[in-house]
Amino acid sequence: MIAQTNITDHLILVQQASRKAYRLSTSQINQVLIDVAELAEQRTEEILHANQKDLDRMDSNDPKYDRLMLTTQRIQGIASDMRNVAKLDTPLGKILDEKKLENGLQLRKVSVPMGVIGIIYEARPNVTFDVFALCLKSGNACVLKGGSDAEFSNIAIASIIHEVLEKHHIDTHMLYLMPAGREATQMLLEAVGYVDIIIPRGSQGLINFVREHAKVPVIETGAGIVHTYLDKSGDLVKAKEIIFNAKTRRVSVCNALDCLIIHRDRLTDLEALTHKLITKEVEIFADTLSYDELEGKYPVALLHQAQAEHFGTEFLSHKLAIKTVNNLEEALDHIAKYSSKHSEAVIAEDKEVIEAFMQSVDAAAVYANASTAYTDGAQFGMGAEIGISTQKLHARGPMALPELTSYKWQIYGNGQVRA
Image (tube, rainbow, N blue to C red; front, top):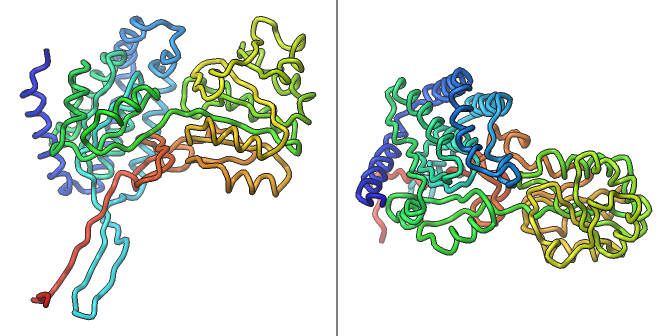
């Protein structure tokens, strides 16, 4: 049983730490991030040892296994992302608007931290590093509620971050890692007055739970039910590489392809389009027309008739649905029905089709002739990301430094009073 008073005491200390964050200089923040990156690389074996303890408790066939797994290369990538964040301009103190009223009052709209950001996430220990880097750079303290699946990894990472904060004489409550139990999740969701915003990262089930139970405002970073539409004008060479990359680069991430929508005039290209997928043992759930086209051309053990539940599913594994359509409008209707508004793509050479798709599709990221694997804060030049927002209020798409700020009005007067 978690002691509620103990967690509340920590949340009070986090709130106090956030109020002192404005005293940190940009150079001091940048040096902390650089030092955390260096220490993470130096302690790679320690992190991997903790991560292995988590991996040993999970079935390797679980879609979350790849997200949970850290490697030397992935830690180096995380460290590189932290150094990139250190190089970015601060998002704070930006004058977003400025004017002088007839009564002499001078108004400035200035970017400021949100305060305390709560993150609820599942088996993604890299999030611990990413959230800390982005929150510190944007002047926010963070409360992290990781899943029990990544408990050992998160503790090891938080320990490294706290060591660097102590070295720089910064309050370690700039990052508070909550206990892994579910009771802590409920306490965070109800932490009104202590936490300013909550961002869930994980499955659709987690996101739905947070949205339905949170008393603190929520920014949804939704699941990725991702489609790519191959138009009759699409280039076959481009299509083969885009589909393969979007589906197989990392199947457990939210920007991975889930459903190929294909114009019926291109069904004869399906064998060529899917041939490379065989090397990754991708299971295909094809509608009637595409199944008939692939039967005898794709391994029988990997080819299945699609059922209703295969559309609108985030597979997070080596699985792909195929839907045949007669025209662009049918493709747009299918996407509108099943999309999670994360990332959608069209492969076409017809400029009118491309523009109609780009304008009509309602998603945070819409692509023409490119892989959806690019939906990522680092790939968008943001350094790192705290998540991909699929909602429309405040932020949409990869959330990086600017999206972690709010603003306030500063009014300078000289004795004015209102009549």
